Every structure is written in structure tokens, then in C-alpha cells.
Amino acid sequence: MKIGIDARAARWYRGTGIGTYTYQIIYNICRLDKINRYTFFLPNENNSDLDIPNNIEVNIIDDRSKDTFWEDVYIPNLISNTNMDVYFVPQNGIGLPKDKPCRFFITLHDVIPYKMPETVGPQYLDIYLREVPELIKRVDGIITVSNFSKKDIAETLNFPEEKIYVTHLAAEDFYVPMDKEICKNFVLRNYGIEDDFILYVGGFSPRKNIKGLIQAFSLLKEKYKNPIKLVILGKKGRSYYDYRDLALKLNLKDDVVFTGYVPVEELPIFYNAAKIFVYPSFYEGFGLPPLEAMACGTPTIASNKTSIPEVLGEDTLYIDPYEIEDIKEKMLILLKDETLYNKMVLKALKRSSIYSWKKTTIETIEILNR
Image (cartoon, rainbow, N blue to C red; front, side, top):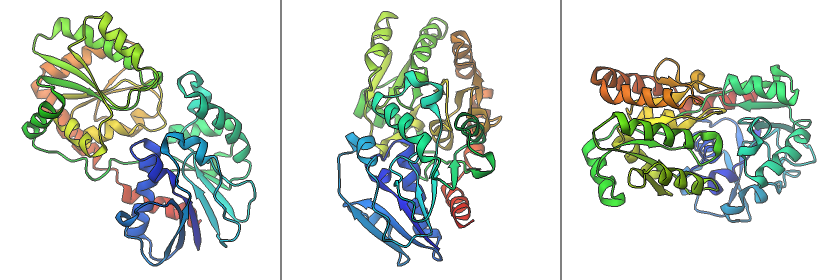
């Protein structure tokens, strides 16, 4: 069978959930599938890291800035002369051609623009709401990332549930336990953070509940007398100034650290250096950062909403993200109870080990072959 994959997100959006997903799918296809034939649509960049085998052809497309990703990826690839059996678009179907020379599959990660439109960037919201209802009329099947998302998609978009397939995601291979002192020294040298810290990774959207986390941290500081900081990683999005102003209002100027953009290769260092990881999101289609933290052996506190309990099972401490006092209490318990803390380290490692990108890719290939 010949399968085409729109792989632009693997280059233009690497470091985000969709970019990581696309990269890991094509990376593992290169290593696992020597039977099917593929065409990867990729930008004109150095693709040597993929080690592309003979059964895979690369169709080079014009390179564009990843800063305009959703505008650029809206432009479909030209696939009419490629004799494909299946064409697969991983980035929520955006960029699916209007003409249909073969079967179409997409990965639809979530329906957040329908559920929480106020938390989505205006450009993406416009493209999603305009394109997704039309493009799903042309697809033969949808892959999604959790059973929660499967139910959400079926109900929200009135799409047949039997044509929606679930493949869970995984932490990438470089998220592993490392020497904690070495990692803490790196963070001190490069980012000036010398105390123990609670870590948040996962974007600046209002649905991530960073405000709630900062408020809970303020209450924690009143009860927990050891030096500790809250470190918030990531490119400072539209909501950053609201979070910064809240920290200032709560007299946390020196205790809440916004690092700005951190390279992907440094994320495992932060996860390992952190005392605990907290993920108080209101809504997730999957939620990768908690698994990444757990793969590093970092005890994790996470929201009990949407897909998160499906992904993390019984191996995390759950919070109601709408209850500030609950977030504070769970952080305080985990920081003070050494026996529980050590138990959560082992639980974290155990849980993360059940997921792998190899498994995700094999399941994806099987779905496309069907």
C-alpha cells in the first residue's frame, strides 16, 4: 500500500504537541515499516535525522516560517499525481485537499475550539471552525489520542464513533531520570534558580489554569516554610502579562519564575531538577507534559478533568482544578510527606513505561492498512 503523510508539522511546529506527534510518527515509520511505501511531504530542510529508507520518498515543499504555521499549513499539498491509497494529515486535518483522489485519514487531537473557544488563538479558531466541519465530510476515518476525545469528537461533530480510532501518545525517549544535583546545578548556572521548585510546562492558554496554580502557590507559601519557587516554562503567550501581574499582586515577584522559551533538549533537565510537577489544566485531549515529567521520575499532581485520568490512571495525585485550596493542599502534602513522595516517584516511572511511540506508530500503521 502507498501512504502519503503531510509531515510539515514535524518541522514547522516541533516542540508543541502536534509537532511532536507528527515527528514521532514519521521517525518511527522510518524504523518500523519496510513493507508499505510512503511519501512524506516535508519542508526543504536537513532531514538526515530521519534516516529515510528506500520505501519512503520525500516530496519537498516550499519552506515557510513556523510563526505562521496555521496559515501556511492551510495550503494543501498537491497529491493528485502520486497514486496513493491513503493520505494522512496529522494536524487536525488542516490542509486536507478539496479533491479526493484516495482515502483520507486525519488525526483530530481534540475539539477544544468548540468546547473552550475563548482559550484558543483567533487565527487557529477561525481556521478550525471554518475547516473542520467541512473536511470531516471527506475523511474515511479519524485517529484521536484518547477515548475521552473519541467521545467528544463523535458527539460534537456528529461523526460515526466506529470510524474513530484511538492511539495514545507517549513521552519521547530522551525523557529519562537523570542525576538530580547535576540538573539543579545546570538550572542554577543557566537560569539563576537556586531553590527547590515546583514546575509547570504546557503552554500559556487560559485553559491551562496557570492563574489557579499561581494563586494556590501563594497559599502554599504561607504554610510551607522551606525556600521554594514556582517555575513556569515556555514562550510567553498572549496571557503572560496577566500571569505576571497576578504574581506581582500576590507579592511573588521573586518566587514565580517565567523562564521564557526553553529548548526541547533542556526540558528533561528541568523535569529532573524539579521537586514536583503540577498540571492543573481545565481541559485536555491527551496532555503530554505530565507523562514527560513522570518519565523523568518526578512526582506529579494533575487535574482530574477530561482525558487526564484516562492517561495517568492511579499513578498521580489528582486535584480539582477549579478548587484553589485543593491544589494547595496536594502540593503541601507531597512536599511534606517523604514516604508518599518516594512512592509517587516509583508510580511515575511505572505509569510512563506503559506508553511508547513505537506502540503508537504500529497502531497507526495498522489503522491505515485497514
